[in-house]
Image (spheres, rainbow, N blue to C red):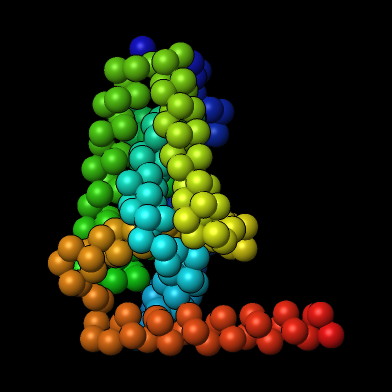
Length: 233
């Protein structure tokens, strides 16, 4: 069943020779972040971001729960995006307009971020993101919106409940999303994959990566304790 806007596309069109302003800004940001990412600096400091995430996921059961539930959350989120209007509609001569869906846009941005963080593990994560886009595209067409949103809601509730149980009962610490929402949503799929590659294959992005991460975690905890003492005083 085609989406409700299939016969009435959005009123705006985009000249293929000149991308819209928000894409120009995104392209500029990507280039700037990529230039900082070399050597693990700037926004793409993998040690810094993974240390923040790992500090909230130290209990083995909680880590396993996240390995099982994070990617289904991403997958079902992309399913819903297939029922939203296209991000861009590019006019093509003698053919239907070429449209870029929200689902593809989100999967591509996630994939690009992961590759910029780490070429090997990031490439695998990027492949999984694009496979999710292909699979969700077929699933969304098969289910239709009337059934898809119910399936998505059930999976999201189940997975989020499992993660909160993991933090409340096993980790005994609030989830990372309460302190850094954007990182929790954007980086969690990559970080659980990185943990799985470490646990099952002994992979690390470069030598001493995890030793450096543990050192950063200890330093961050000491800083938090000092700030807490200052606040109490």
